[in-house]
Image 1: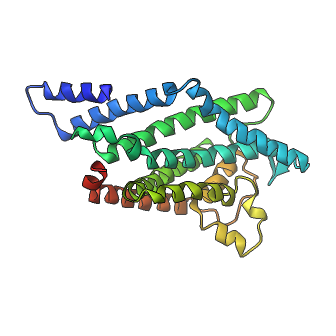
Image 2: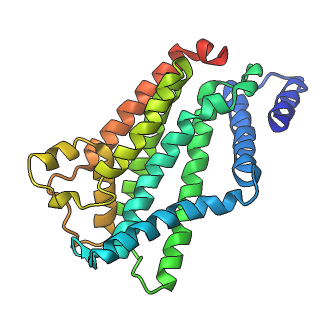
Image 3: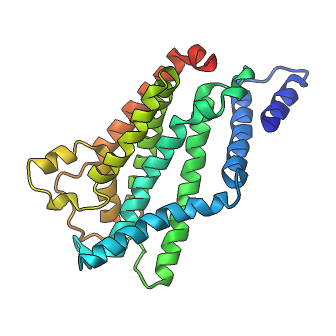
Length: 274
């Protein structure tokens, strides 16, 4: 609140009017600093939990696959397969979750007329993207120290997959944030969706091993395409699904972002008055 208030007072103290773009950038900068401070210092060891969540999931799945005596999946070392899939899924999930909760977490800021609900959503999306990139680099560096091969054979393909999942998370979150703001009960349903999505996206099992027609049904999930593309970018001989389509992932992301922005514009006044 202090950062936003300072930003608004500085704007009002100027003798000449500022452009809408300049005001928006100032708001985004203040919101970004506020969100970053909140994520890192809202509780003791908050930064630690950013790392421990994916590490816990990787360790848990490693134990499960070790007990099953599985050493590689689709031609990839099992540790690398699990880590890349989890980090790719987390890029979508964390972004979608944080954007979904952006309005309810920043209701007090809407007292400033310059701050719109969509501003808080977009700033949170940007922050989560930066944090997930940092977490990914740290975990991959740690895996390399333990002797795992973590250098992607096609870095651009990996970036394309992660960027597509980030955009998909933004689109999903924009739509869900409006739905959650208008009908509170939908927030619980949206939260419950993430667990089955974790399973059917191919985090825990290779979709290429699923027989038809079930494989085609699973590929209706755009997140699954992002995970498969990320793994294929790391190891070119990975046995990915034959119907892998980055166009489907990006198409879903762009359509959902457009729809989410349209919903934010349509219900902006109702979201502010919650």
